[in-house]
Image (cartoon, rainbow, N blue to C red; front, side):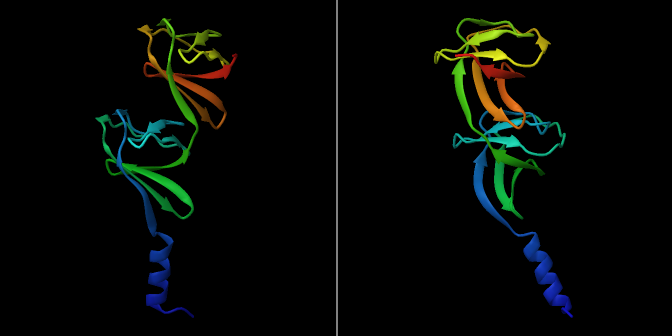
Length: 155
């Protein structure tokens, strides 16, 4: 039978964590939501890996990535959520972005073309907005001007 100190040490070991990154989120942070995307100042992208909703607005907040029991945890402002690394790239839309119209096709300044793969309608106008395309658990997503939709590569 284990002694009280052995049980205590064993329990402490189960919650030990190793810091992977200590720095800041790049740009605006609006909390945690379903499959939220986070860019860190070191250029890496992380995708929320579990559902948790917490609204908190901050610009370039401090962030800590740590490994805990085989999972990577992102901690910001005293709250934490599991995340996973994701492939992502940045570009711009050539010309005007007028939101998501159902099956729209978008040409990026890097020459790629992406089309909506799931229906979504949301009007939002921006000229040559920045774009982030990333791999989520259920397909590729494109984030433009604070709104996101599922996309597939056409060219």
